[in-house]
Length: 99
Length: 130
Length: 122
Image (tube, rainbow over all chains, first blue to last red; front, side, top):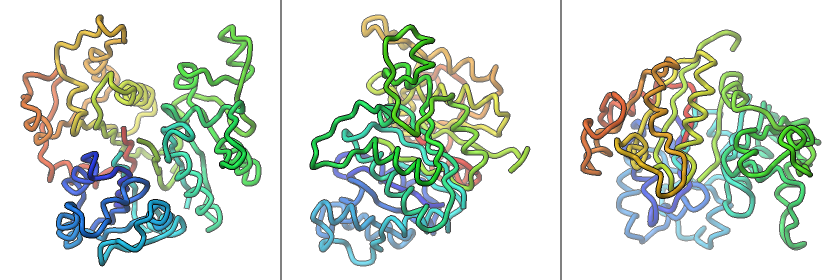
């Protein structure tokens, strides 16, 4: 399953709830304000790095760039574009949006 | 692959409609089919042709209309959500005794069943909201 | 897909009244019931507040739709799940809820979500 998270983890618990309910091996894509979760050196970084042992983390490049954090992404988070988002939605059997 | 996309937020206030549009465009470019785009909650506000954004900004509504025309997309606005928020086509306007309609080209008003049907008929439902 | 039955899950994570999502989610569940799919409804995070007993909206002049959850059974929507963690975090128990539900751990919810064909998020 592909999980999308569009909320900043500094403001909302969507990412936390997603991480608590996603099956091991799932793909998690950060979009919109969700991309702030991919910010390196933040208080969330350790949690994200830990999550990356269980899940594959992706972040939407256009959203990272728009927010000025494209060069501050945690190592190992895969940056993709909208075409990559479409591919992920196809490769996974369903998509769950954690709003 | 056949997609149904749900847009749950209005234009400009939230990025959901922009993200949904970019996703839809990318999916179409890859040769996938968009079975339906369903506008729900404040997402129905994407369907008013009275939108007038500043000239240096994108026109979210016109962009959906143009994509619909180019790819023959089915843009469906939930009737119950639309009535609450004052989005009407000519029929709805008449039925509810209103003096105007405001639906943009390419959009149609229909029931919530269209969302469920989209979920049944499509390979994937992708939701953009808040 | 023809006449196949798909598994639909409605995931409610928002409290009622502050925003319209809970009410409009319920409207989808009611309409969706007519399609005779395999439906389940789950309440996680602030979504558990949707089904708390004793809601009285007179003072805010909004429609109290909490009793509608009790009617879901008549629509053959019988699988109502609540996140045990979310309920406990909010100091609530099953006795505080307006409908009979099944409490599920996060791991159980993970398994249930994985079984679905379509997940609708509110």
